[in-house]
Length: 537
Image (cartoon, rainbow, N blue to C red; front, side, top):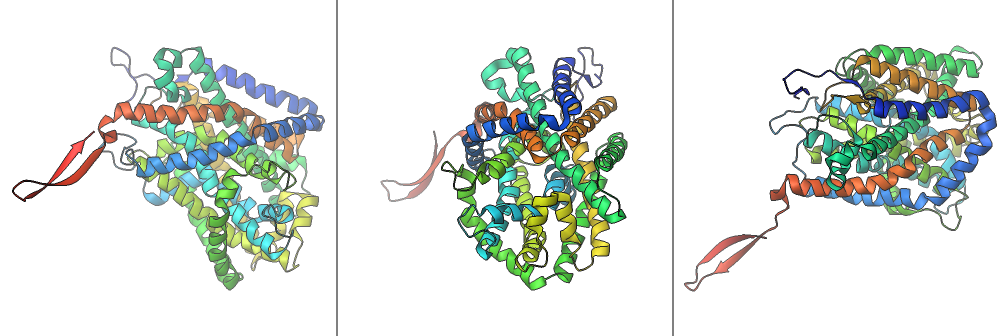
């Protein structure tokens, strides 16, 4: 990738763009300071905001997912399928396994390894598909809902907004990495580089800050809880803060390396570790039960998918399940969409749009399928057979204790807990690193393509992310986590529809020959001969 240069040919070094960084920093401080000063006293206000946004704008989030699904199918199988990210002769920068492991580590690794055992308990209790709570049918539906939420639902949520960002960054090859570039076809270059563009860029950064705050607000307490169980200490807020600071320091070290020497190596190791762990669960766990779950979950998910993608529970049949789960998930994914678009583009140089869409949605959905068919089904079996009451434990003690309780009932708990702890720890590092790199890229000047932002800006953003996570730990509770995902994404939903339109408009201008319709027919001449004729409209 050619580096940005001056008119004299001098190479420009990446540097902080204060017009975007300073508003983003002020927004971060506006989140951090009240949480540190007020702590749990913020909870009533956070709950009120959460309820307002999820009930007032739930329809917009679900419309985003439904329209996004059709948009991605059009990109993968339509005229843009063979458009490359990068130059025409570029080869993929990473092999398929490394590419997939990095995408999964950045996109959902830290979430799915834990929620695959917890979400089925929530869904079994609510029974949104109409079954009796905690019945066999409710269990079957719960695993299907989990597969949908963490499979196609998640990757459509990421890529429906992330793909236009990737297209404008790597197909058009601008000199900066700015979300506002997605809107150049309707705003023009002057507005994109002016106050309107700055505001759009700031909204994208705000959304990503909310997304990473949500992720770490769930991940750090879980990691601290597992660590407390493993080494036999009490799970306290001080343990959570210690875990956050420790892994923040490890992430800063990894950030000092290039992506091929830092995150790629961690993702490769953790990806194969996941394969070994899940394979061991099949071999040493309830093998027949798990294998039967594969076919059962897949069939049920195909039946429920249209319902999950469109349902907002207008008449309150699920006691808020649609808002608390489906709407929350989609908001969380939209918050991550600009970062995933940028990250996917950075590691997908040399791949076509078809490869990117089918790879992300395909690998992502397959991984979710495997997690819920193995870990999810195992947790459901523990609940249904009465071995342990995971649902009651979740209601009383939360996610970390529930995951630890499930792991303690695996065939080899002495090995399962430490290996699982290592797996989650690496996912925490890769998640923070991916977000930090992208926040730094979006707030740096003189960056194009896959050029990395300055080390100092990466470290600054890592510190900001750690501070936000510290505030979430102080306030505590799922409501603050949910609200961090919901509120910043309200403007991003509107921008996403415009970004999709702009990508199609730009592609028609960039590749007009791909959109010309050609018709072929057989013509019979007066002498009886036949010819094939192609007409272009």
